Length: 253
Image (cartoon, rainbow, N blue to C red; front, top):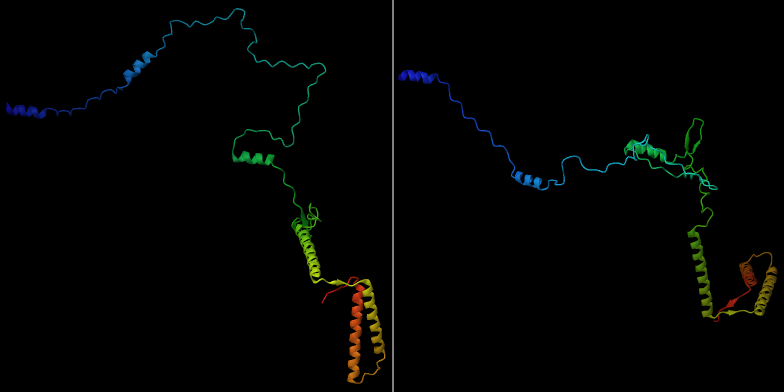
């Protein structure tokens, strides 16, 4: 019997492993709170059946073409009054255009609204077509068209004013020095007498000079002739100076 039971036990299938149980369904801890709040705030004014609304009057029945759009009525011109024409926009007016902001549209707007480029002036100097810009070449008379063309520069006027002021200061200093030295002015009578005396001396020395021998063969004759020439030159210089200046000052020594 033992052997038979052992054989029977060997033929039994192996026991299956125990499977884990299904987890409990998740229930929020706030479910009761939410349910109470929903019941508390429930609309109490709702009733059974359709809502009671105002019934339209039979006089306001739907008419034909009543829901089609209609144009605004035209304004009639009053007698003696005329409608003014719309003002023409100025040349500088640019309408506002709402377009997509991308670089293609921006470039197109810049070209449309931008000012046209002015043509550049060239100068062709050879028959092969060699050319160069006319403005930087110096051939275009653009400097004579300036507003300040022909006007004396400021630094020149300032320099002239400084020179004039220095000349006035110099003249003032000279007059002050003359006053300090107490120089005396020769009268017209004294000037005439001095001039006559100088001319008389010149005539006497000239007479002596003309009386010299033609041949100056000795050293004494040469020295005497040179001395007379120097005296004549000095007298001529003094006579010319007195005749040239009407006012003559003499320092008090």
